[in-house]
Length: 469
Ligand SMILES: O=c1ccn([C@@H]2O[C@H](COP(=O)(O)OP(=O)(O)O[C@H]3O[C@H](CO)[C@@H](O)[C@H](O)[C@H]3O)[C@@H](O)[C@H]2O)c(=O)[nH]1
Image 1 (cartoon, rainbow, N blue to C red):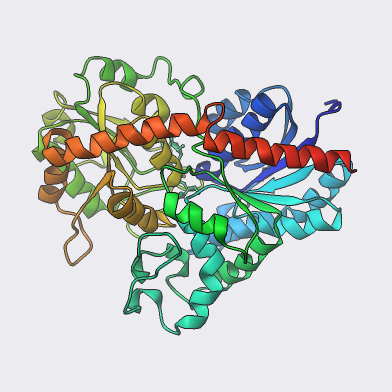
Image 2: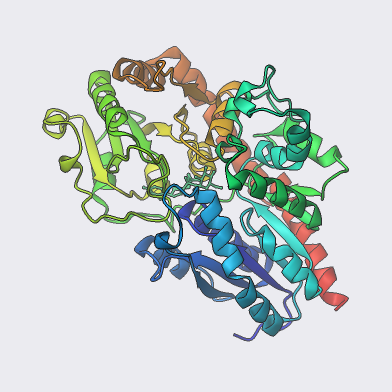
């Protein structure tokens, strides 16, 4: 493609839908809203999944797409953490990236996601400035900036820390709720996180998918901090309803038949999986709540809460084959179960949706808030426990579930939380808060809004960069 006079930016994303989606949205926005010429390099399945292909088709013509393959599961020993697979997939692409960047010069910037930070020295060799598009909260970014300090301050596992961790401007967070891959210092991924924490300092700036009204304290502290690159909150960037419209999907037709604000939507993102025992309790809780529900159900997994992160391995996803006997029949008047994947943005934007049981993946979180939907926080892995703390204790837009000593959330507890969210006073308060945030999110992105202005400033830097080349 001819890139003309527009500054050319390369956007590099890591594997998994939770990263693919925001990087595609970000790349599309650079071309559409800022008239930049963009090459998006994405790590996808080979071939890309139907969901990946459909999102790529939504990109404007000014975005060139290059697909790098993600490393197959067989290349890793059983039990390898997803984060390790992501970092290693990106490492395996670096020589191809080097050649490609060489052919694309002159470049105004390379923008990488948090699992692609090893590309920063490659860009530096070619004289290209690197930026990070951080696909989670400012609170998680702050943890990355303070990881070395934390590592030096305590020898044991973080779950044994006697006092909560106080990241600047953030709600205190217990050590056990810090990101999951740093919970075991003996796992090789811990050392990788420490190594990568240093790479953040090599970037020219960090764009974050968050916004002022959502994380004012953390953003202020990051803005004032001088030991790291400048931080630019540019969110919330999510797919437009027109892109994830789900046209004709049975769950949208079903939602059309339900009263306004009556349905709780249950989904654990692209990767989340429950154990068989937990899946049973969730089914019992939904049934006992007697509330309407739409549940994206996936086959249970006993040992890996992120079992479907790199795609679903089995085609056998009929919920009837793994849900409790008789559940579908008994609940058919109140609920709908869809296998594996739903058009989530359309579901959250539907007037019948009144609550969201979520694993607190950052994209799901933003999608819920943009549509003014209050949350029940059910974190599973990655940085989701930190997000849950932020949403329940700081932003106050989510209910938490109490688990028993085995870590299982019982059916009665799940039913209690759902009834409280859809019918209770607490639910009303959370809904008001979610609507406030929805309005604030829209204001941040409109012309003159905080995120819009910040993005224009960064684009101006890139344009200036281009003019000095
Ligand atoms: O049935 C589904 C399920 C998911 N999605 C979409 O898939 C994305 C999932 O992203 P997210 O909610 O962030 O969850 P994960 O896929 O788990 O994302 C990974 O990446 C995120 C961003 O870094 C992290 O916050 C998470 O913890 C990490 O697991 C969202 O856009 C969803 O709308 C659908 O459209 N339909």
